[in-house]
Image 1 (spheres, rainbow, N blue to C red):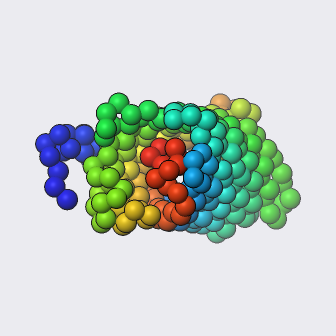
Image 2: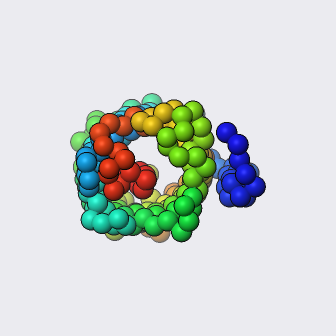
Image 3: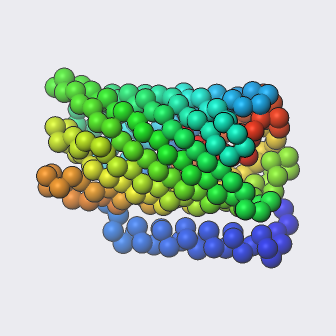
Length: 257
């Protein structure tokens, strides 16, 4: 792949941002996580996509746990900029030191996407989800509502049609806020912020791999004495796709669930 000076400018800025995130988090982070995910997606001929995240994430710490999850969802394009999202997440956490947990997260959301130039695009994604959590061993149940807002800047280096090339770099700013803080299940956090640097590598027109490095900050509700947690999170995603991607109005938006 040959990068022009114009291409190198946003790439260098995003790389600098990622280094800053990493250095800052190394000073204060107490948790490190890694995730592997398969994200299959089917495109209709015009307005619809059906997808489903299938993954595993693991904390790399002495209090070890592993979470397995699947999130089937549907996206419908309202026009060339707006889309509706809906789905449900199913999670199971295998805890080595605490009781295992199961969780359901139905959600609905709205996204907006626009291109400033042929290469530079900006998207926003707002959704609300209900979290139903069940703790095995002590039969504890809880639920809360969480709001999520994400802004993504993306810069396209090469079209998806160019095989075996770096396709896109992204920078995400994201916030989560619990509508009702749940103090019955520990630990519980009132809000979370994330900064994520992403890079996508195209295998062919129907497949790509995405790499993410994120810094996450979680703060507990004021009535709980837990300390805040900084987390370094690394994720690798594999995206296979089928259907009429080139005819679909959602093809270049990439609003990940």
